[in-house]
Length: 250
Picture 1 (cartoon, rainbow, N blue to C red):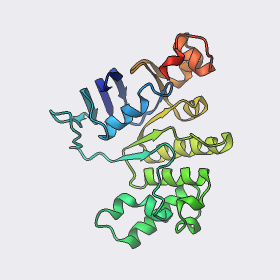
Picture 2 (tube, rainbow, N blue to C red):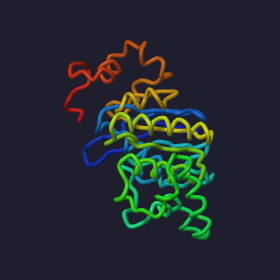
Picture 3 (cartoon, rainbow, N blue to C red):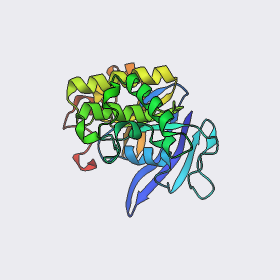
């Protein structure tokens, strides 16, 4: 469903992505782990067309999303949902308008959008009586659920998650992880998550990949995390300061 080949991106003299390669099968829940500053978010933004890569190829469902000038072009109209780090809800819009934001930009009536938004709220375990509240009136966990509702509102083929449990307490984070796992399965969607939260990775991943120094250096089934002797994986998953991963990578 997602194929990224030899992807490169440089900011000034800083090479963030260096011939990055990853293949994610349809229905797979892939999690990319790695330190902050190693290029995880840049990879997602290239996939979304928010950042233009310097070189490389990105295909979705076997169709390139980059034209000859490397500009974004989603020709096959694959629907993509996104849960941004921190939620990225619109402060000036009530919950139901946040959830149905994309449909509201089209020709769908507000009445229909609100009905669908209320149904989606239920899917993430929230009651309809919060639909007219604003994000500032919600707890962090509720905001994350609303952001998840927005991500699944259009029943996308692909859902991208950027650090979905950042800023949440362990119990709320576990609730969000299980909701993500449940909703991805319900939709039959392909999921790509970036995180440094290993509890989250172990819960939602079918496959785990490690991004280090701008490239994928390891990838396998989530069960192999506990069996590998890869020194980078061992250091990262154990949270150890000593090992091949330099502090300067941050």
